[in-house]
Length: 123
Image (cartoon, helix red, strand yellow):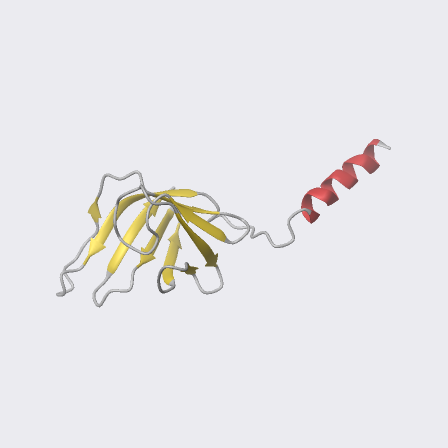
């Protein structure tokens, strides 16, 4: 009987989230650097002091305590959207889709600029 109950509990745990994403990206990442190239290709990431974060959830949603659509470092405007690991994009109602890359404990968001505009977040 104990084995049956344990087996049922395991099956219910797996069945409880049919649309959940299993991925190491699911976590909270804090803004640590931004890159805004001046137009000559010489831009590099610069450290910032910010409380801004971006958080990825297993249901495909993403939230931030700052603007997802802009490179600002302020953390006074909650925004949200969805993300895709098939296309590595974030979709929000406020702007074009944003591309992102994941490397180890870092997430880098690419903003739609003529020259590279990026924000680097760390777990």
